[in-house]
Amino acid sequence: MEHDNGRRTFCKLGLAGIGTVFGLSALGGGAVFLGSPALTNRTEGQWIEVGSKDDFSEDTFSQVILEFSIQDGWAYSETRMLAYVRRKGDELIALSAVCTHLGCNVRFEEDRGEFVCPCHAGVYDMEGKNIAGPPPAPLSRLPVKVEDDVVFVFNKQEEEEHHG
Picture 1 (tube, rainbow, N blue to C red):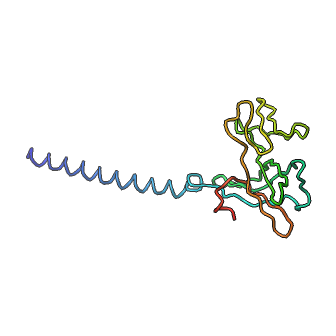
Picture 2: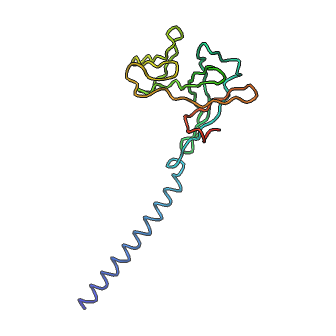
Picture 3: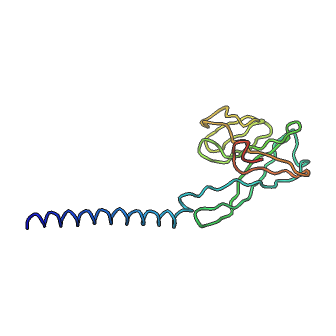
């Protein structure tokens, strides 16, 4: 009789273990399904119209505001991002205004020909290269394209093959 109780306990524990594994698998799969936008969301970049080609000069940067929608889980919201655009020969250059130190917006000081972060005195040159202060990296260069004299700026820095 002692032998039957051992077998019975072994079977109960085995079934309980198998049930637990299947239950957790179903629960985990359900959680991934229900929460997938929050877990796997990756906002894609967007091309945003910023003006005509004639709006930008070689002498100075023009401030542009990129307005676009972002998705956070199931929620969509409108957001704005500051950037600077100027002509350099036949091409247009766009730089994000987000300081690489702590994310403050830099401003272009035309008389100095530099971008300056008002928060911690970070300084960037006309190419966006960090030249003074605490910023650890250059300003992000944003892709630019022109279609029928209309200028578009991509709101994310991405590899060349993703935004053409």
